[in-house]
Amino acid sequence: MSFERVTVIGGGLSGSECACQLADRGVPVRLYEMRPDHSSPAHHTGSLAELVCSNSFKSTRVDSAAGLLKEELRRMGSVLIDCAERAAVPAGGALAVDRERFSALVEEEVARRPLIEVIREEVVDIPEGPCVIAAGPLCSPALSDKVLELVGGDALSFFDAAAPIVDATTIDRSIVFTQSRYDEQGGGDYLNAPFTKDEYDAFIDALVGAERIVLKDFERRDLFQACQPAEEVARTGHDAIRFGAMKPVGLTDPRTGRRPWAAVQLRSENAEGTAYNLVGFQTNLTFGEQKRVFRMIPGLENAEFFRYGVMHRNTFVDAPRVLDGSFAVPGTRVRLAGQITGTEGYTEAVASGLFAALNTFADLSSIDRVSLPLTGAFGSLVAYATSKDTVDYQPMHVNFGVVPPLEDGKRRSKRDRYAAYSARALADLDTYISTRPDLFGERGRA
Image (tube, rainbow, N blue to C red; front, top):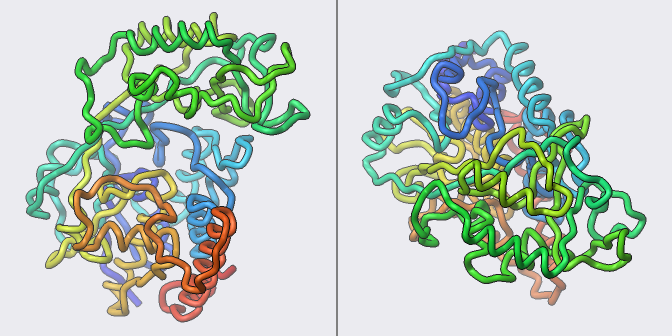
């Protein structure tokens, strides 16, 4: 069967997954990426699927919503989740990747598919024919205007932030110790910078009083909760961050044999362990203030920064009002994918790219569109993001708060309940995949 060429705009996580999935189904694709000639405030390279914030795809536990989503994507044959697993670096129970290795693997996957033509130029208008706009929340102003004109709705926005990355050779290992939480053997995948109470008090005072790039007190609606700058968290209360990113539970400082008052964890950026990011320390501080304040962290007094933290505005559409259940703009051949739909997170972006590809393929093949089980991690998020009953729409990660309740009426602990959600979701997904060989063929089977 011969298919009409599809234009995919954006070579990030969503667009790269979408292009690969379409090509694997015999659909020719033009994949547009404006970098490196035109960059964004958050990007640093021209690579496909560059990770601009953390290097973590979050939990791998299948009884968590994030881990369940990864397993759903494996069963549906995700290309980028496979790349992420091949580029993995130690991160305890999370899937974290070597950024450069991950992007290189994605570029290899795209390059080995002859049906994908990569075009390095900015798209300033919506092209004719079937199109997937996966330009991300930082797409160019010209294209953003065209998208808003097309959907006929208002743009919404929030602030997103990234954490600093430090040179591993400048970390004082006589102070910073290796341990994952509750690992009493002193091993693990994280470095931990321990604080005494006095060190913590001085650090928080400096963090709250430091000069910020965006000189205003953010309102809560301006900040995406999962990426709030550390200084904004600290401003809500002196001990707020000690119960969040700096919580010391499960850690033992080998110098004292006791739990520290607080701790900053650092996670490896690459397989070689030459660079570490400050977990949970997304920031809006000026670069000079980052150097001054973050060098107050015990063990980082002489730290050199490979990258300072950055903050930028993200834009997303009011999906429940302007998109249908397949993320298409009603009455057009245009579909949106990725964070511009308000589905927030790396794995969610990959999932939306796969979802867009399957639905676009269905449209081209004149078969039924995708109807993911509402019990699943991504199926429930899509339902939330496209339901007219959703009000005051804000970016959201997959979570068990939007899945249908269990129907057996049993009382369960939180962990047992989440495990039951996951078991139900995967059983329902397996059943759905088995009924749609027109979409999945033999790929994606568990």
